[in-house]
Amino acid sequence: MEVDFISKETIKPSIQTPQHLKTFKLSSLDQFRPSHYIPLILFYTPDSVDQIDKDHLKKSFSETLTRFYPLAGRIKDKNTWVDCTDEGVDYIEARIHGKISDFTMTSNLLHKLVPVHTNSPTEVPAIVQVNLFDCGGAAITVCISHKIGDTSTYTTFIDGWAATARGVAADKLVCPTFDSQTLFPVDMATDFTGYGSSDEEENENLVTKRLVFHESKVTALRQRIAETQTTLKYPTRVEAVSALIWKSAMEAGSLPPNDQKPEPVSWLRIIMNLRKKMDPPLGDSSFGNIFTPATAKSTITCGGVELEELVGRVRSAVKKIDCGYIKKMQDGEDFDFDSDFEDDHDEDNDYWLMSWCNFPLYEIDFGFGKPNWITTDAMEVLDGNDIYLMDTRIGKGVEAWIKLEEKNMAKFLNNLDILEFASIFD
Image (cartoon, rainbow, N blue to C red):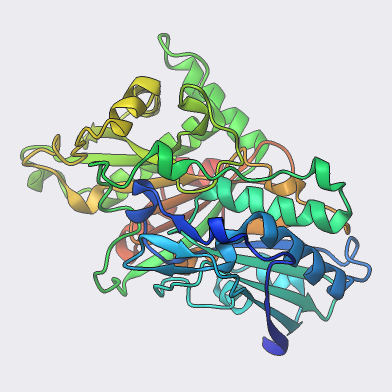
């Protein structure tokens, strides 16, 4: 698979950032995040991409940067603020000598569509690569530093760029709000050490797989869980798939029964978007990292844990993250998320869950139709025992990226429930 780089230039905001906005302070939640890129790759098929007006795409990008001006700056002073001097964003165009289908069937090629090594710390907030395929399709890759924003921020920015490219009137365009630093000041004591902040050398024995739970399978899974419990309401698709993956991963990573004395504990840390849980709620356009982990735990029993029990644990953990909890965060209470870990805590059987489900990513239209597939370079982005959930393009299915140790992945993929409900891709 050959990649020819056509051009590389720096795109600056179409209007200079006013002097009083030159210094953009990062919130406490931002400062705990790594400055690694999270790439979002949007595929557009030849049927939708007749002929991209590349100059118009760049012009609309420049206009969008005017509204999202921190992305064109540089992260400074040990990642505490952004110098918004309009230095610009690297904008790369590449020709891909291959077909889109080559990428949708295997994850091993996705890195070719990403302009940077995603795990490299950087002071540059964003980089873009527009990939044009020989078959006529395109893949637009937007890499944004996790230091400056979360999934909601990525979605708002890319959708804003697309709306500008479509010619949406200026007064109808979404403008971000920059209130995160005020809501979560830098002296806030909360620490989220663990998520995306490991500096340890990566385990070479880690394996990444993509699982697709089609809508019909998700419906069947939800129905099975609903039939075996009486106290919980019907599980959501994210609850059902999360519980199934957690259960299967626990079983794959657990030690033989004779070695489990006492029975260890597994933790699932679920990344929660706080915007709608605040009082008053924030809009989706609120810029920055506005999330916290909810923690669910389960004893790893020799006989296994029932799915409905794990759904209940996930739901209870999420329910605790309410406006009162967030208010305590804002007041500077020191939450030690590891304080409840037990002596028999099994660190190798702890998991991080990030869900991009229900974000309107498949609605992003630059003027040549909606994307055929949206994904990330999960092999680079995910650390060990990480789980990413995303929507499928058609229906209410769930696509899952999972990274586990190779020995555990083999057991995980042979789990009877995984084989029943998921389609597995390399």
